[in-house]
Length: 145
Image 1 (cartoon, rainbow, N blue to C red):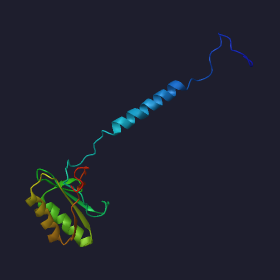
Image 2 (tube, rainbow, N blue to C red; image 1 turned 30 degrees about the vertical axis):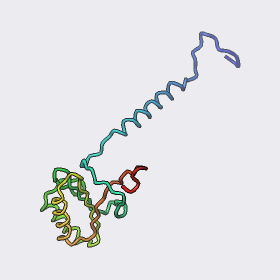
Image 3 (cartoon, rainbow, N blue to C red; image 1 turned 45 degrees about the vertical axis):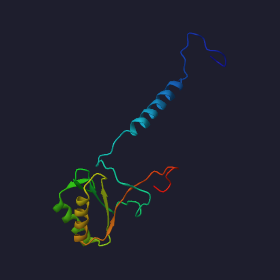
Image 4 (tube, rainbow, N blue to C red; image 1 turned 135 degrees about the vertical axis):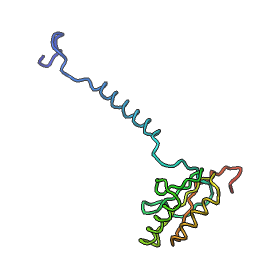
């Protein structure tokens, strides 16, 4: 075993790394594929599409109010009734009159329901209301919308 070929009776002492690398790469690929399909809990929402967008990107300090297609209202991901929403908006206004409210209304929700929420925000004394939208996809045949 000194410097030359090992005899057939001696065990192979080197570890083969190829199967280990194959398994590691397979696990990485499986992780990448499955993580793309993990849905985060929240509200299923289809925002209206516009060419122009309003406001700065969402920050953790913003209040996020969502009006789902069925008219259900969520505040920061939690289902709320209109009186509960009003209490929370007033608490926020008492702490910070400049707090920003992101009002996300599903494109299928009744306009009246969104206006009811806007009215609650104004009654609470908050004036910075943003209506986020998704960007509209422009085509070459229709560059203006």
